[in-house]
Amino acid sequence: MTEHPDDAKAAAAAEHDRFEALVAEADAVSVAGWDFSWLDGRATEERPSWGYARAMGERLGRARAALDIQTGGGEVLASAPKLPPLTVATEGWPPNIARATALLHPRGAVVVADEDKPPLPFGDAAFDLVVSRHPVTTWWEEIARVLAPGGTYFSQQVGPASVFELVEYFLGPQPPEVRAGRDPGQARAAAEAAGLDIVDLRMERLRTEFLDIGAVVYFLRKVIWMVPGFTVDAYRTQLAALHHRIETEGPFVAHTTRFLIEARKPG
Image 1 (cartoon, rainbow, N blue to C red):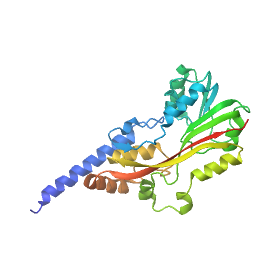
Image 2 (cartoon, helix red, strand yellow; image 1 turned 60 degrees about the horizontal axis):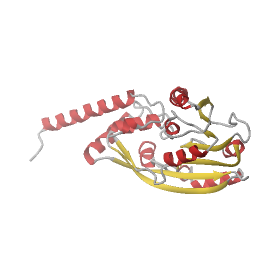
Image 3 (cartoon, rainbow, N blue to C red; image 1 turned 60 degrees about the vertical axis):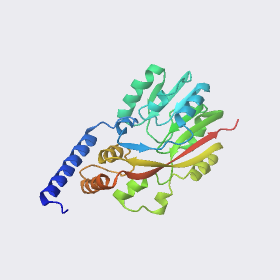
Image 4 (cartoon, rainbow, N blue to C red; image 1 turned 135 degrees about the horizontal axis):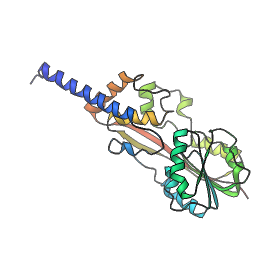
């Protein structure tokens, strides 16, 4: 049976209205902090098998002095059952600093406003544990400097070409050197060059699904380095096309890459 033109127009109008509503909602919601719970029911992501938050919590429970670099809103650090007597977190984005302070101060942890560049505002050998979840940049020489002899750096990091199906949808094919960035082998070499010994290094590729266009907008607003300068207005045409694709074909599938690295300072 041939679809009546009026039916086609009504369906197109309904799809457009849904697009506008989803985009407006996702464009208005706060993206402060590093809590992705707004995406519940809108996106799914496989989790790495090693369970970073749990493993980090175990190490924090044994530490005397710990530093969490680029803590975001402090959510991951605050999830630890027990914090060391001295716990410090750094963060550079003002909305996150306020959020982390409110969350971590009741736990006895101090939040230090610090730009993501050397030097770290701490003395040599100040911490026996340094942790970081998804750092933008890892300053290995500074980490080695602030670690006490025998101290450990424990981090989950974004791996190469993570969610690049989405990145390349908006930006087009990326050059090989960009796709190869954040390789765990490079992290190993940099850590060893800074005088650290690698205890553990592993990577996993994990399925991610965006169930509606609002999830895409929220994700790109929050993870600002994926599509630099992303705004709804700048990418409205591509967003509308992707919305139609999701509505007609199902979730947009991408793959995150994560690697775990644990390094120890000799001594």
